[in-house]
Image 1 (cartoon, one colour):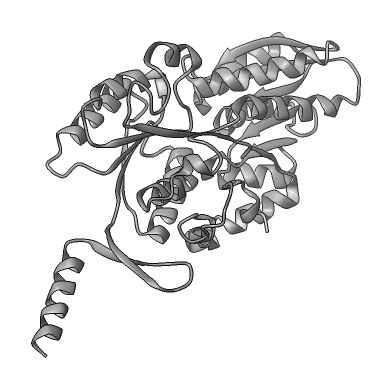
Image 2 (cartoon, rainbow, N blue to C red; image 1 turned 90 degrees about the vertical axis):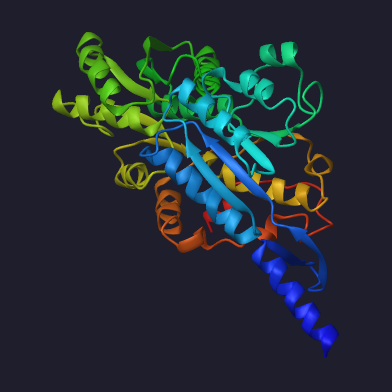
Length: 370
């Protein structure tokens, strides 16, 4: 009885300290392990639909997997983002993992800040560019605590949007306007490269002008107010995200040019608003899926913490084909799924800690389209 009482007290103490016992895939109880803690340096605004939704999916995965996740927003300001990082570094209770985005090319400075820290770093959404890596090295090289990366194929996204948009011309000649994001961000640069790759395959389509809408609806609206009257023969409008597409669509409507009728618009993202626009036919082309990246990163870090190194299951640096062209029916399915608590997913299904025979993660948006 005395031994039993001691064991109960010890178990309660471990529970209070945040230690958990993880069940193996076969249902057997394994050894106790500390619940991993993660801080995500979200580069976006705390009111920005895309980045808030991105963090929500990430949180759903963390909850399922028993990770303690904290999200801090950089408010699209490089200095604010770096200040957030310094606060994490100085914390009396530092996290096990820091997840960062190479927004505004802040990655090298973040690596330098945490060079001598036991915190392990993971780059998400956009990693260091090839030029930056030539200087500071890649993951697990000069900075040994930078353990991996997970990014989408942004160039493919820009290409998919452009090809599907050009197909609306049915082989005829036509003119296009393009709204890219912030000039100094990897995502905008790569999506623009995809656009230009598609245009090189279609010399019959003339890009009249590309402007930087900085991901913002109001800025793209003001730009489109000037550009659409300047190029009255434009029939295609390519946008690197949904907010800029909506700004340009508003300007078109005010000028009497109907989206989906006189002009074909493309967009990228997964907000309820953009999914509804695709369902209604106002958007002719929609690419989505990369909002799931943070959730898949939680799966990888969970496995790494459990001794299942993700490097053995597809590599330490992943570029996953998460972007998918969404037709109206798929947009409707996704819109419904995004309203389901926890997105209706059991994230343990995607974890090597629960499925040790897994050879590669093969992350995709497909589970949300069923």
